[in-house]
Amino acid sequence: MEQYDVGDIHFKVIDLTELRDQIEAVEPVAIHLSEKTKVSFSEERLLDSPIEKVFLSIFDLPQRANWLEGVKGVNVLKKPGVNRSGTVHQCIADTGGNPIFITESGNGNDKEITFVEMDPKGMGGSKFLYTELVIY
Image (cartoon, rainbow, N blue to C red; front, side):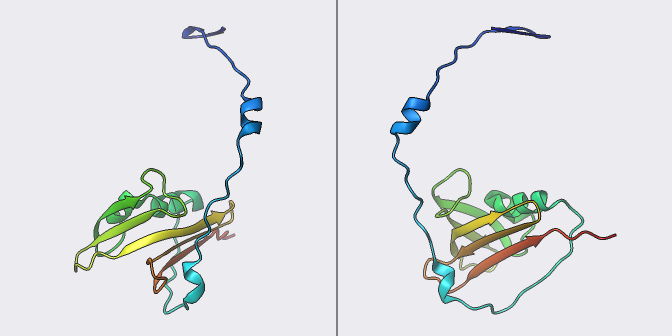
């Protein structure tokens, strides 16, 4: 028990170290769809916003319809929940067609973030690269 300004908080603690040591580590399946592609075009924008806020806006699939031109919505088709490698989603486009994409990878640090998603055949997709720009 611990005492806080809202009152006493009762809890139990169990050390799970032994159980964790019994779990076999499973490596996620690597997706390499983008290895076959070349850059067709690129677009660059300067945004006056923290890098993590921009990344979270793009990484949050349901929110894409709020900022991605031509997208009315997004349906998550596989691995619902947090977007991660292997997540499959379909963009509901204004023009129809409704392309399907697979999240291939996402990684970075507080200065640069990369996020890649591709169509299931590796014929096209998007690579988002966010770099913090410091202006003095």
